[in-house]
Structures are given as C-alpha cells and as structure tokens.
Length: 117
Image 1 (tube, rainbow, N blue to C red):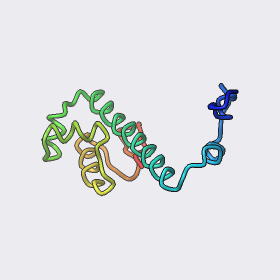
Image 2 (image 1 turned 60 degrees about the vertical axis):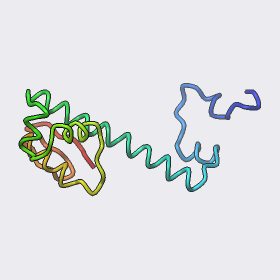
Image 3 (image 1 turned 90 degrees about the vertical axis):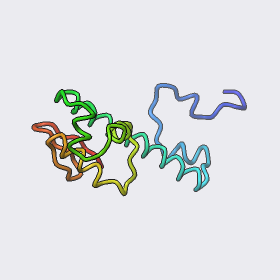
C-alpha cells in the first residue's frame, strides 16, 4: 500500500462495512448528510425506473399515464427519471393509480409489488 492509498484499497473483493469507511475516511457531518442525500436520490431513481418498467409491460404510453393523471407527458418522464420531491407523494400516488395500482408505501400491480419508500 502506498502513502496515497486507503487501507480499504487492500481489501479488494471483500465486503466493507459503511461504518468502517466513515471512520476510516473521517467524513464530516456535512459530508455524511451529502452522502446520505446522494444515496436517497439513487434509490429514488431506481424505484422510479421500476414504475416505468411496469408501464411498459402494460403497453401503456407516457401520454396515456399523463392523461390519466392530469399532467403533461414531460411530467411523467420526469417522474420516471426519479425527479420527485418527498412532498410529491400525491403525484406519485396519482401515477400509481394511473397504472391501476394503489400507493401504500408499496406500489402493487396485480401480483407484483414495488417498495417505494
């Protein structure tokens, strides 16, 4: 290991606990908040893409979902790309309803369930 390498670099292929990395890299509280926020954004994008997959399997277009929701196709596209604020749960619920599902915290489409939050 050279002087610029982290101790984690020598553990390739081995699982590293998040808490160990936080300690090792000595993230500041601000950095931890930024990291957590980034992780939440990635999770939101993955969950939104799952909804797009359901829509496509149902052979439903973004325009059809938009009409059912009373929004524009561009808005549906933004939703499917994870551009949702936490305060937009009603928008997300409308999207799920447009696809025939109902939002609890889990989106249900027939026998399929997608955890949204």
